[in-house]
Length: 398
Image (cartoon, rainbow, N blue to C red; front, side):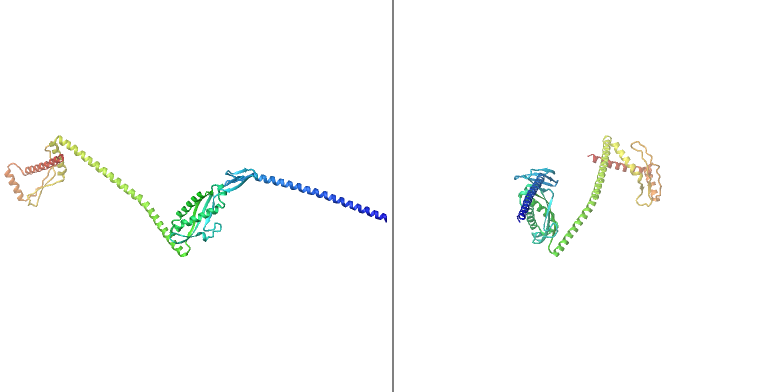
C-alpha cells in the first residue's frame, strides 16, 4: 500500500511539475507575442508618422488655385503652380480657386426652379414683377476671402438682393420688362462692386445679368408682349428706313455733286467766253482810239457784209402791187478793198404809172438815172447807220 501511495504521489508531483513547466512556457510564449505585437505596432506607427510627415511636407498647386500658407498665425499667398514644400505640423495650406464662381437670385441655379420670395418685387409705378438675376464673381484676395468674413458668399448674395430691390423699386415696369434691362443690371453690378470694395472681403463681381423678368399674371404678360412686338416692329421699320436712306442719300449726293460740277464748268465756260469778248472789244477799242475814222468805216463794212447778203430791198411807191427787188451786191468804196458779191440783177414788173413816174424823174434830173437816185439814197442811209454806230462807240468810251 505504501508503495502504491508513494507511486501516486510521485506521479502527481510529476504532473504538477509538468503543469508548472507548461505554464511557464505559455507565459514565456505570451510575453514573446506581446513583444512582437509592440514591435510591429511601433513599426506601423513609425511608418504612418513618416508617411504623414511626408504628406505634410509636400503639396501641389494647380494653375487655377491660390495657396494660402498659415505659419503660427502668419499668412502667405502662393500663386505659382506646381509641387511645393512646407514645414510639416507648423505650416498649414488652404487652397482657394481662382476660377469664376456664380450664384443666382430668384431661382435655383441647379434645378432652375423659381424662388418666389427672392424674385417677387414691386416697381416705382406700383406694378409687381418677378425678376431673376445671375451673378458671376472671382476671388481677388484669398487671405481676406478666408479670414475677413465668416461666410463671404452669403454676404455677397444678401448685398445683391438688397441692391436689386433698390434698383427695381426705382424703375418703371416697362423698363424692367423691356428696354431698361441693361441699365438696371449695370446699375446693380456697379453698386454691388462698390459696396464689396468698401467691405474688403476679397471678392469682385464680374457680371450681373437679368436672366428673366415677367409679370405675375397672364393678362399683363400678353399686354406687355403686344407692346414688345409693336416696339420690335417700330425698330424694324426704322432700320428699313435707315437702309433706304443709306441707299438714296449717296445717289442724291452724287447727283448733286454732278450738277454742281456741271454748273461750275458752265460758269467757267461763260466767264472764259465773256473774257474773250472783253479782250476782243478792248483790242477793237485800242485800234479805234488810234484811227477812229478808219475803224468806223471798217466796222460799217463788216456790218454790211453780215447784213446785206441776207437782205432784200424793195422799191415801191406805196400803192403798187408789184415790187422791184434788189439782189445782194458788193461795194468797194472807202477803204479801197475789193470784194466780189456777184452780179446784180433787177426784174421790173412795175405798172405803167410807175414807169411814167420813173420817166418823169429822169426828165427832170437830166442825165441822172433812177439807179443813181437809189444809190444816193442807200449811201445816205448807210451814213446814218454809221453815225449811229459811232455814237454807240463814243457812249461806251465815255
